[in-house]
Length: 389
Image (cartoon, rainbow, N blue to C red):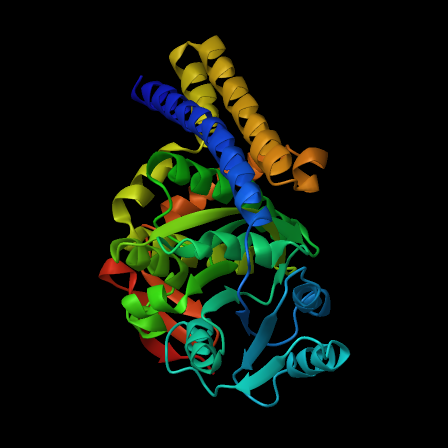
């Protein structure tokens, strides 16, 4: 009966989470409407777009070129790489030559001395940036023409210190990268929307973070983030604590997910989850109750073992309906991810996988990234333990 009770509790808690996420969609849509009204009357200042690059990636040219096609009055783009032989350099230079109307600089920043290499690039680029608003974005991001206007407009309010964006996963090919991508579009998005509903934004999302230089200076600049993997979470947390508002933009971007094996996907996801476990331990522990399929499956097994088979069947059916609703409403209706409309059943697998990743985060504090092995310590900081050859 303990197993059956656990299944019932888990099914109820995941249902409550779904209802909160659906309510959060309404708030997100209302905020988007208010943003559009303000944006239509705004006078936009020049901004600096900061993009770290590292090697060849799927759709790299298309991703970077989307930033050259912005409907925005004046901006510059800064690229940064670790070394002169980086394979992304020719792509960046070719695009700069193709779009001479957009001021572009390419920087070689050297081997990153910080655990988070992109954050080191951001620090170097921020010092060279000419404009008071910085829009940082990963190289695996594709954006629409209104992107800059939509992420910059809230920063025209001096009370707002940072803006971030939801993102939908774009699968560049492969089953396991598809699992990663649909998790972005549904699981990640639902969690962010619910956090925005319950307490407002107090963190950032790495694919896009826009800040003013004054709010960045108030937290000590990017140097304050140098020891964190989850620098996106920390920059939002620190800016919120400094007295500025953090805003979730209504603009949704594409986050391109490269083809990967199961183990590549697993290590990447567990690294993120482990970092979150140490960055916000209470919230991460509670997130174990938002999954649905594992509790529905447990209910079916426990119901069969205890003689309550029809209760078990109901719990499993309810959990399936729960996740299909979440995939369609969050992933398709809100983020417009076509994969969630074509194959919402894939999110059933992703939900079970997400629970396994959450559980695995409690059995390790080690992670690998680029050229190093690291240990995650209290507060989400990381310490390098070895250099990979």
